[in-house]
Image 1: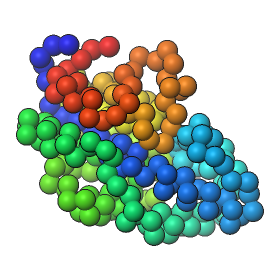
Image 2: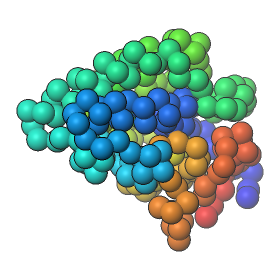
Image 3: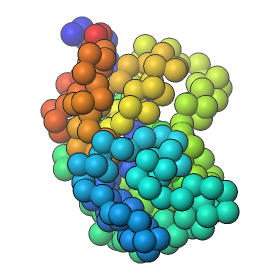
Image 4: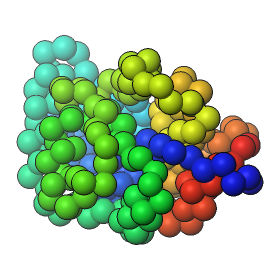
Length: 221
């Protein structure tokens, strides 16, 4: 590891900065139960989770044809928002965010979630001032963030070698790969990383607080 620090960090939001995996798991099972479908275990949830979210819904048995899907998305957000007040920050993340800010590293949220929802949650946690911006869609369909990241990068004059993505899913890794930046994953979120990432060239951490050194100082796989 050399001393060439990252200058920018892209943070995933759900399952990385906020610890909403169990809330989301509960919402999914409510949606399944309301539709007379079999509920799933937490292990099944983490093994099935993927992007786009529509594919994940199909994997767990939720209806994804057009007419039913519109209502499904609406019901999902109603349930999620009703539980949002109970979602904590991920353990250790506030200390990491503050340390990076102290070291003048610019931080962004890169999320497939609704942009307004992310801003609203930031305000509740009192962390809005720690981020330069939120790169996220205006809708709630969670289609993914590769195109969002590409569009953002095309408007910047920043070397990809100075940026790292921190997330909790395969999609975060794929997004980082698509724009040529490094990636670090934390196995505390929505996907079971250890099975997914066997043999892949990505570093996986058991908690956010132990990756601070790699966020402050650039590493190469």
